[in-house]
Length: 121
Image 1: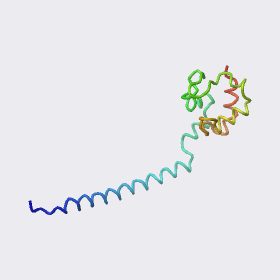
Image 2 (image 1 turned 90 degrees about the vertical axis):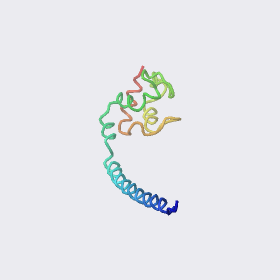
Image 3 (image 1 turned 30 degrees about the horizontal axis):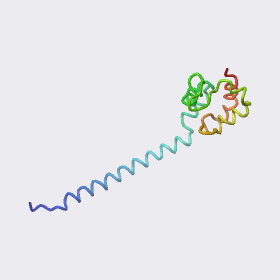
Image 4 (image 1 turned 135 degrees about the vertical axis):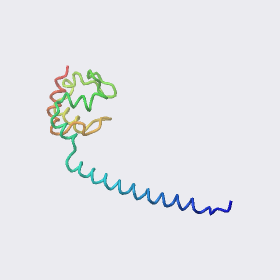
């Protein structure tokens, strides 16, 4: 019972300091990898650049507007061309409106997406 009670605390402290340095070096490696992804634009941008409006809808819009364009969280998209102009639709798909977040459709695909949405019946 005459053991030194400081030894376990010193061991825990040393282990904590070593773990902190290991995690820091791991974070530095991840930081460089994230910087390279942001610089290159990432693979998602390339996928979206080659995507058709229907593919963009399947990826970004179906969760709120439904698989049959019937609406849900977001409004129904059938007949949206009768209610809004193509310019208005393009503005909404790029900048968002209400609870719809901006940036779901890239600016260069907005006109094509608006034309496709306006044609939904």
